Amino acid sequence: MDTIKHEKVRRFEEFVDRRLKPDLVHAIAERDKVFEQQKIFSDLRSNIENLEKNSVTNMRTLVNLGSEVYIQADVPDTTRIFVDVGLGFHVEFTWSEALKYISAREEKLAGQIEEYTRLIASIKAQIKMVHEGIRELLQLPAEPAY
Image (tube, rainbow, N blue to C red):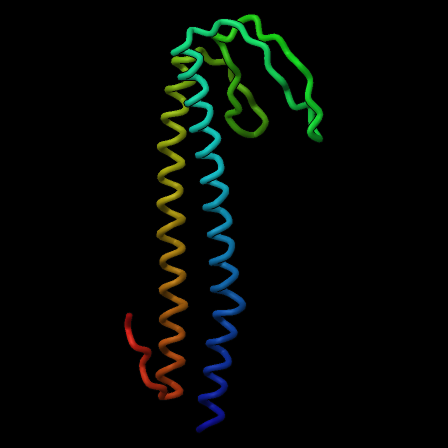
């Protein structure tokens, strides 16, 4: 009977280590990617609003060519900008069009963050439930709640 308990405990621990923990790490990493995208769009919104507020129609800037190599660029007309919409495509927008697109995209990203947060909470609950099952199998005393 004792070996059956130990085999069950081993299987539960293996399930947590091989399935639940990697799923949790993956979900957290995916949520972090969405947070990063959200930050990029937030920064873009802020930059566009600053351009509008200060009525900037032309500017000089540095452009990253890659590998942290920069070149100075003159932008003669800032009223239209290109926004990366995914899959390597860029769309030319006016400031107001870009702000509308950013709002829609931020709304979508907020929904994705909520989904990942729920998934993370669910996986953590499953891990806790499996640990509680192991505790009961081994007839250990319950941990005090803080």
